[in-house]
Length: 129
Image (cartoon, one colour):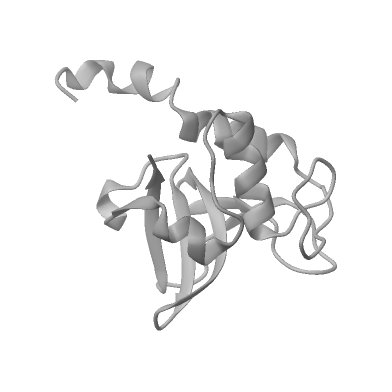
């Protein structure tokens, strides 16, 4: 950013922040494996849906989504970036970073879309290009 004081205004209009707002609007939608919305989601289905509504295409699975993003350090993450949960090199879950170490995500069967604190250090960050 060339003019640091404008960062907040410019950031407000990014596809990531739009996707974040869309994901938050789906709060309470039930988890369903393989679902991509508009009323039920799995984890990557929620991120795919939110970014599609924000004008950006993503692949279907969390691992494929990770491979399509620009990878970031935790210090560079911003609201609207994707948070990828991994075990070794295997990405198994994704959510949208909401700030304050929290994500919007569709956790697992029996749960619904929610805002939740990141519960592990085994995460990678990616920005949708």
